[in-house]
Image 1 (tube, rainbow, N blue to C red):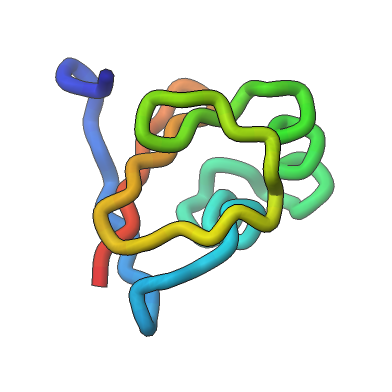
Image 2 (image 1 turned 180 degrees about the vertical axis):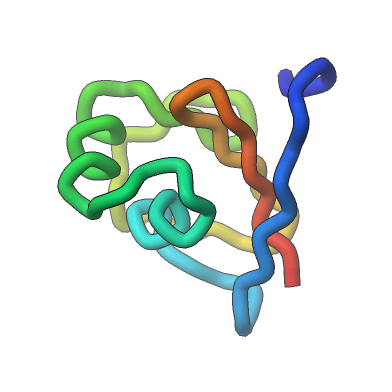
Length: 75
């Protein structure tokens, strides 16, 4: 998984957010279009599994990897 990489904890109010929104909030992509393209291409992993659902609901503790970076949903 991401044991050797730095993981950024990204606070999310209410503890839940959609994958596409989180990618931008975490700074993994600059625009929603870039995030959408990466998700559809299979370049985004959630909890170490490829996920192609832009609207996937993330919860506190979920780990997202994209663009060689890792971010975790936190409260």
